[in-house]
Amino acid sequence: MSRPLDDIRIITVEQYGAGPFATQYLADLGADIVKIENPASGGDVGRHVGPYFFGENDSQFFQSFNRNKKSVTLNLKDPEGYAIFRDMAKDADAVFNNLRGDIPEKLGLTYDALKDINPAIVSGHLSAYGRTGSRKAWPGYDYLMQAEAGYLSLTGEPGQPPARFGLSIVDFMTGTTAALGLMAGITRARASGVGGDIDVSLFDVAIGNLTYLATWYLRENVITGRDPRSAHPSLTPSQLYKTRDGWILIMCNKEKFWNVLAERIGKPEWADDERFCNFSQRLANRDLLTEMLDEVLLEHDTEYWLEQFGGQVPAAPVNNVGEALDSPFAQERGVVVDTEHSKLGSIKTLASPIRYQGSPVPLEAGHGMGDDTEDELRKIRDDDGWIQSLRDKQVI
Image (tube, rainbow, N blue to C red; front, side):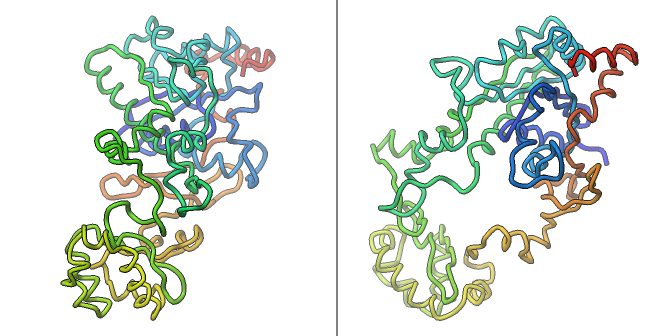
């Protein structure tokens, strides 16, 4: 099946989470992603992140971020290795990295370093704090950004210690932003013949995703904090409620849903109650409304209420990871698929969330470290002796 990015080629110097997450989406859509891994350091550090492994240099963590990509071992700090990298970049649309902010310039991964061999090259950079400013040489990770950008102050229950997201959400948001930026740069370069640098950072994206909370502070000097039961800061009922066997999350984020909820729980008179008749009144009386809803919802299990709401009231069960993946609707959507691993045969993995022409995109397990090195080198110079000499010198 042809895919939208079949004619895009990107050389990446990436590792761990955010960078590989970015290019994985592009690979899903057909881009030729050639992942450069340093043989001297054991390749992408993600290959060694446990506790679960498929084999040597092949962690389950790594496989979560590197489907549909090639792997080439190459030491960019070696002059001969860097020369090979430049040869690879001559016919590439982009190079991409998620290194510390001061490293791309040192390794020659910037547009200025590569424009002489490819004026249309796009150099994408994903760093912790940016490639300029006082922190460009600082290492940084997702949880640090969640802390500094205010996320921990918004997550969890009031009166409890600050809490992070259960996922590396800043990594994923920054990866998605980087993929968008990279494709925007490639689109412009193809039209103009001139490339350039595209920069995103974990810090900038973490701050940028404060969105309306930032606006409320900048305009009204309001500092949003934590509300009980993961409640929406201004809309209600939009939070967790107790059921007989656990919890349910209900989100009446439009007035019409409140009327339907009241009817479906057998309390139609609540819709016109002056204490609950609109968003502002319900917010003013949220604690009382929570008690009243709990009392009703505790009469039945979560599944019963989901059936009663029947897609007319936005609601969801509170699942653990296993329940989420095993749920009938997840199975209906095909979110778990089998893919072929070079050594293990068929393994289960998550499907790409992108569907092209209504169909899931093809998936291939992440390649072993260096599996594609020889094939890529032969595109530059089909010479057995040369390739062996690179191995002997540990360039590859």
